[in-house]
Image (cartoon, rainbow, N blue to C red):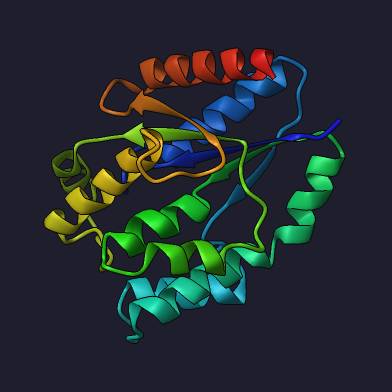
Length: 201
């Protein structure tokens, strides 16, 4: 039986990492053993290059940055494929859909963004941690080149909502989570959505 690939998406400071780990703990209590993965993978050489770009150690154009993000995901292809083949639940903090949201909002061709990720495995289910960009902006103390531009974050959120609503078609099912609530309330909403979705499969 093929596993399940669940991705947490959203603008910065929306609680993706926190909620991913809370969901992992909940799944473990239910007897599951989820695998966790994060993008960018800052421990790997490509991820380190992305981090340096984000904090302006050097400059490259948006297309080149998009290719770096795609390469970061691609290097985990075989691992994700193996986990899915083993029937595991995979939880990911960001994935393909972050690149679409952030780069399309910056004016990069949508078709080109889909093309460069055509060799990555698609997710099954995306939890959009939806948050007002003004709240995101106020939560972050040390901001990277994306996070310090509030108008840009508004555009990024709009692209995420377009994917959620199917205006930009993607293969996974999507669910919106109100990330402005208290952490435990957000977790309960995420758990409810994931539980219902898994039961429907």
